[in-house]
Image (cartoon, rainbow over all chains, first blue to last red; front, side, top):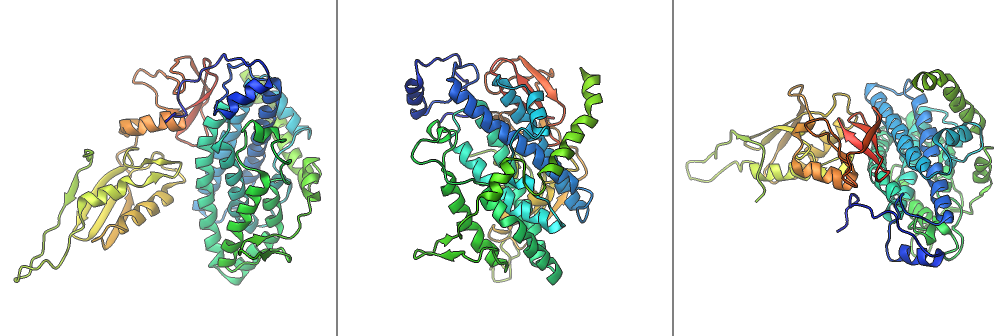
Length: 310
Length: 175
């Protein structure tokens, strides 16, 4: 079996997009030294930049909760999660910058200037500690499922190699999420109602993280070029299928009055209002402005470090 | 048969009654070791904690098992999870009645405790490498030595980040 560390070919060229598609369909993996089509380079770059931005914004959010974590052990967990996310962002920005479309500084300035996108879930505010647990339990699991589906195919070699480690580490975060939820679920009435309220704030953003249905057939270049292995709606349905019964088993209510089971017993959510997701993509989410400003201030405050190092 | 790198200190004795019937079935040391081997590191699920050199002592005293582990870093956030996984794996061994897991303060873990199987799996599957004894780095993807350190801090405390100028892949280094 081919391992992730098998020496990449590199330096390959393709006569046209059909030729390139045939290479992808035959299971080919693209490496940085290849003369890849501009359209492919652009799609992969945008995808990795979005992922990198999301890891960075997620890490900054988790960092805010380190001083508030109840107890040393949970502080340690949040320190480690923050380090993971920032480290992932670092690796992803390296690979994205190498693609030659934007430098790392340009990507960061676009992000802090509100000109770049990142995951919808980082446009909302975490109100109580229970929100952090809802994020760890629901959002980390959604991110894990979507990243695992990218890793399963992912035709861009350097991205696939980083994803192997990222996916393992996100799996580790999910276990922390389960552990923390179990503490609340078996806790006092106040703890349980705190989580129920947080669930009201985080269920829909987590479900929407997968995005609206993918464009029909193979019109989505991300699917055609096997950057993603599964369609958005497939991932979303599988997530709902898994998490509704889990939340019920802990005795919590899923905040969707139209949620029901179909004839085969599969959970079907009510109709999804995509407006909130679209708002986050325009930086118009409930907490977008504050989050971006916080990140931008960090960047400005550390300018002297970059100056000293250059 | 795979060689077992650990000494198992058996303090069991078959307790035979005067009729010759064993009343205690001692926990089998070999099965305890196999159960330990099945425990993967939370961050590298297919690399065993035995191969990573985290297991220092295994004591089997009749049906009581005591495992001494050492952490890669004392502040490692995975310690509780690893201990839980070890406990669960050993409790499933027939004949085991109690399991104690201790994190030992000494000896200090270093990359020299990793087996060649762990090194190979980390390089091939996770593209994570160790420095050579002369401090040199070899890219796990293309084999080049043209690898530059980018950041002392990686996604975990036990790894730093480098970059291979030849194949243009990030390379993480265990430290």
